[in-house]
Length: 626
Image (tube, rainbow, N blue to C red; front, top):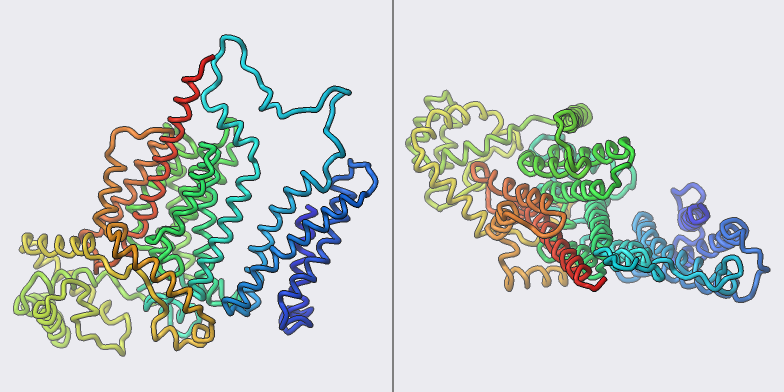
């Protein structure tokens, strides 16, 4: 509580100094945020001293000693430097000068300094003078260190690991500090977020400069609009992506550490966020990225629930189920084809909350909750945004028709389906262009002569005609259709592109908020070199076939070591189903379509490693003499 009060005092003082009492103007130290941070920290130090000395540690009746004061001032001086350092890096090195970026930097510094202060307060500053004694006996030692084993009884397997976990209870805070630092560094590289053409369209919709359409998920537009309204920064969406990823990885890292007692393995979980095939899209505002991160968050919730004691309240389990369902419902809303990937993760979530769930009531209740939240969320988003219907699905029959049928058959089929003369001519032109130039996919953007004045609604005007043409013609050409779909799917598996989004598009840079945002080109170039080097030297990390094989192996292998065999299979099934579901629908070859299988496959591989480490510990413990 004292820490929370000191944080509020520090946060308020800092913002008053840089933004004035109204938080909307310029304060007396607006141009010197580092000095403002230092002064705010000094005010909070006084609050912290009074609260800790005379309340938190009020049982320490000794008089105030210079040793105590010097340690307190020394550790808070260190905390001052730790808190101010990210502000200096953001301002002096990265050129980030907004109030939002200042507070984000200070939050990172505050979290790190809190871990440092908490540890030293308990062990040095307010520690008892001399060793603690009980009833005049000798010094009290760590019970775990003095525990003896009854004669003739073997030491319980894993006891050494559990003792290590108990003795190093501060390690989760160290993992949190690593996650915060890494997350902030990634956000700084991508600042204010790389915007693809899809991202730019959604940003303009969030800024109300374009009408909202359902071509891209309206829920993402609504969330972005809310973030901009709350923070005043369009970069908040990219920052949110980074925060969700690293928060989920931190939770998973702590769970792995508690299971194994291995610091290296817990750090390996965090290292997933810096893997070249994961970090390459972390700051790109894409629905595929949102899908991957919320599914990872749902997996983290499931594994947290799995560790609950059997006697934990039912309300706690339902609360975790609700949280996981919210993540899964958002995944369905943000990506139209997410259902095949969501189903195995939903099973993982339910089995994590109720490991022995055999009755139908819990399954029906959980499934009903997921359906209800998804339907209610979809209806709520539609009411809030009132999106223009575009019938984007019409891209799929368009691709199939212009690639499977020759141009003359396209014309005949369009005439039979009642297409207008203008639309018939456009379809024939698309078929001719695609086949002459061997353009394999995405005919709407590469072959079809679009009427740009109609925007994304053009194809939707003819959706019913395209569906009718497809049902009338494609069943009569099964071989050509199958050959075409396998060719497109093979390109997805073996010839993916867009491994690294190098920056915002030209149309995005025309938006004032994007154009005025500072970008560190050196950091961007460094990250680009890191990713492209792996694309060149280890290309399989970015290829769909590799992650499909990994997912199938994870799913079909009969036995996995350790306690996570079920979770490993379900993660593999989620990735495999997501990739295979693209067989009849994939519009183009793009690495982002296998981003979730890559992230889920990496998590499953770490769970396999965790199981192997636990089995090794158990074997070593059981081999010791009694």
